[in-house]
Image 1 (cartoon, helix red, strand yellow):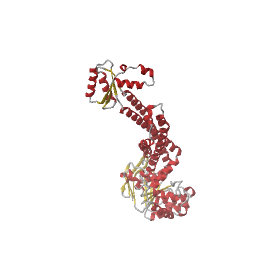
Image 2 (cartoon, rainbow over the protein chains, first blue to last red):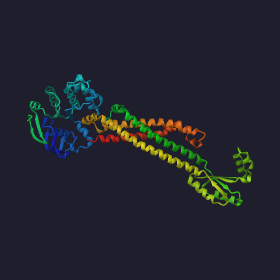
Image 3 (cartoon, rainbow over the protein chains, first blue to last red):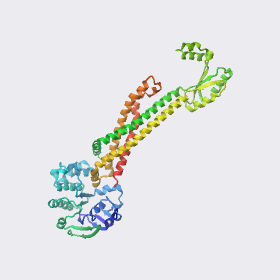
Image 4 (cartoon, each protein chain N blue to C red):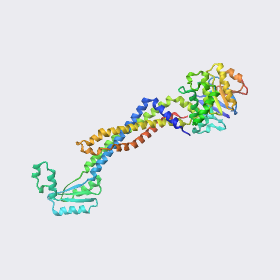
Length: 225
Length: 298
């Protein structure tokens, strides 16, 4: 589903965010990316949805070399990749329902699809009763559920989650992890960057560890360290 | 890409309302630019009509000198008949010329009494084939040198002076219109940038979930064009007002007979303004296109 071949990304000032990184993630896998801040986890995500391009190496997503993608096709790549962030990136002037519907609206989905998909996904993330609320009226965990609903409503092949529990307390985090696990079980490939030791150790999934831009560990059913 | 009209209309409307001061500034600038261009066009048209009217009754008057011999007069007549540039001519003999002069000095009985037929020069009234200034002047110089001719006159200089004056006037107004068009483009550019900045989070999310660039762009470009359209409509209103208070009152003022041709029908004003509004919308599209293009580079 995702394959990196000797990918190197260097930022201005010779900051190496990723050095000669290679790995392959199969369809339906759940993968943790671990490593200290600045080790290159977020860069990896930005490379995978082509917000950035590497200096060397090739990246394949769903069988396509995304380095060869012409810029007008990038939106279509991103429709296959749901993204979840630590800071949720919700639109504060839109209700829960509108936030999720917006994601379908802007990729041109017809209204009747929106009308059925949005309540269904909100049901899935457990926010059916809060459709009309605004993000400011929700707890952090609820806001993250909205952002997961938005990322998943279009049924992408891949879900990239960049520290989705970074702002949440442990109990709430468990809820979010259950949700991501459930999404993973539908066949969606999930890649999650995290600093949360207990989550990684409990889930026992594949772990890829980065340190200053280098992949130093790739372990099936791994632990945090 | 299926562009949802509902979506575009809603987004554009919200953008226009979100930034009232900048929107109003852009609309007014467009309106001023287009009004100036419209004034230039109307002045141009007025002058054309004026010159056309002169041209229709352009005639060259060849005054025969009092001491010209009959042979010289017939020679003039012969060369008028030969000249291919002459459409038609007539000879005003002494009696006719005297009658004309009597009429001219009707209000001044003393002058009329003093006038004797011998004093009045006879003349040829010549209608040229081609009424444009150059050929009129060419004809004039030919007959000027003819023996027995005292003087040749025509309205050519007057026409030329009017045309030159109006050209300069139009250049001035067009220049002002061009300057304010550039200002309008820059202002619309700025308005759209501000609108996009205000909505950067939304745009970020749109890109995140895979909205195409065109989908993101279109509402902003339509916003720019809507501003220009509003400006254009305002310009039509301003031009109609100007037509009423300036051109028409000038045209109907007995004192300025020259401006009689500046009496434009309101429908003329509106018809002339339609291309201006289209130009305005192009201005709007350019301004917003630039603004959006630089914002969306992936």
